[in-house]
Image 1 (cartoon, helix red, strand yellow):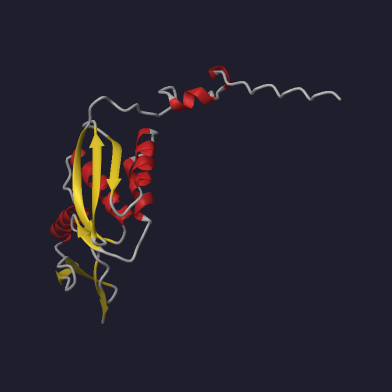
Image 2 (cartoon, rainbow, N blue to C red):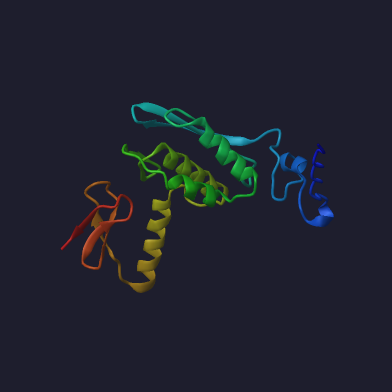
Length: 188
C-alpha cells in the first residue's frame, strides 16, 4: 500500500502577499505594536457587586497599549483587550465591544451608570483616551459643553432641569422629558 504524499506547504513569502505563521507572533505583523519596556498608567478601584473591581490602563503617552483587570471579572478580558489594542484595533472599537456586555448590578463611575464590570473597563479606556487627547474625562462633561455651545448658537435650549434620578440634565424632546445620562424618561 502506498502512502499519500504530504501536501506541499502554502507559499508564505512576502512576495505572495501573505504572512508566515511565524510572523504572527512578531513585530512583522502589520499594525502590531510591541510592548515597550516602560509604560505609564492609571489604576481604579471600583466597588462592584460587593467586591472591588480593579482596572489598570497603561499607555505610552500617545495610545493605550495594555489593560489589566481583577475582581468580579475574568482576567482574560484584560488580556484580550490588550492584544486587540496592540494588534491594531482602535480604543473606541475595543471599548464599544466591552460596552455591549450588560448585567444586573449598577454602579456610578466617571459620571456614568455602568451595569457590568466590562462596561467599567470600557469607561476606563474611554477616560484615558480622552486624557491623551486633551479632552474632559467624562462624556457627560463633553455633552454639557456641546449643549452650552448649541444654546449659545441658537439662543434656545432643550435642557429643562435636573434629572430626579442622577442629577444630570433633563432634556425635553418629542413631548418627553428625558435624561441622556441614565435613561430616565417622563412623557407628558
